[in-house]
Image 1: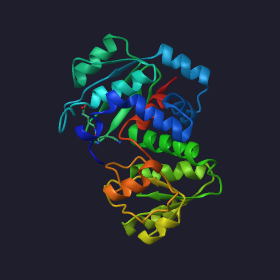
Image 2: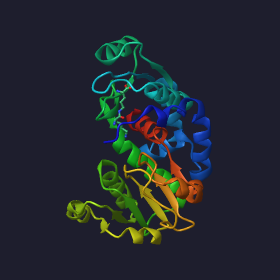
Image 3: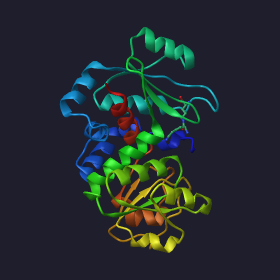
Image 4: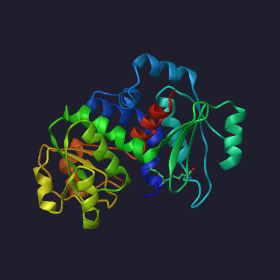
Amino acid sequence: MTRLINDWIKDISDSIGTYEDDLISKTGMGYLELASATGNISKTDMNKFVDDLKIAVIPVTTGLGVIGRFSQAVFSILEHMGFNVFITKNTDVDGIYEANLHEADILFMADDDRFIAINLKENIVADNSIATAAGFVTAAEGYYGNLAGKEVLIAGYGNVGSVILKELKKRCAIPFVYEINKEKYNKIIDDGGIPIEDKGSIVDFDLIIDATNAGSWIEPGMLKDDVIIVSPGVPVSLDKDAYKIYGERMLHDYLPIGVATMAGMVCK
Ligand code: 2YJ
């Protein structure tokens, strides 16, 4: 799993409104609507959760340690959604203790391997990889339209790509998977996907959901001119020149959609 770096997330706190404007212009949904749609929560219930639930973000020092702006970025996304949220002064177990003292209902925390939200009162846990995959498929549906019967290309079949495939199957889409590791092909087929080996076939797809972590591997000419790319993959897969051509047609972020969806998943 790719560890986030400060450079990727440092602008989120200041730019979350701009990120949301981009999301709304492409999908017709803001973060709250996206979280409700993914979690199948009514608008009334979602508004009640936002009013009632208190969230603590706990910095975690284990492994490679705290990422400068990570907790602040998570805080800003949740605050922007309207939640009552705070960052604990203490880290790790002491932070959990502090969150509980302040009667937090939900905790957000990440080490180097896993990023989770826990609803302490309802005993519900959301994992960021699963939430990110689910949130980006909801966003893809908003951006592209109904996915039933549509051929969709998933790029990369790791933790996120495999959840994307499940979400696409739920929507009766036809999922193809571009994956360079052929050892994964049997699993892709068992899971109901169609593996693709040839990079040259990527240009045939109208909608690509990119869950790769290689960065800068998409070059000009590799995609349809009017492609839609929805990309939870980090770092960004478009190289500099490809970004100039397709960047406008790509929905990508390093945290907000995943965090918003995690919140929806633990709201009860
Ligand atoms: O609290 C902190 O500042 C750090 N312990 C945050 C660590 C962030 N963790 C990661 O970047 C992991 N790779 C999990 C991220 C999941 C993104 N899908």
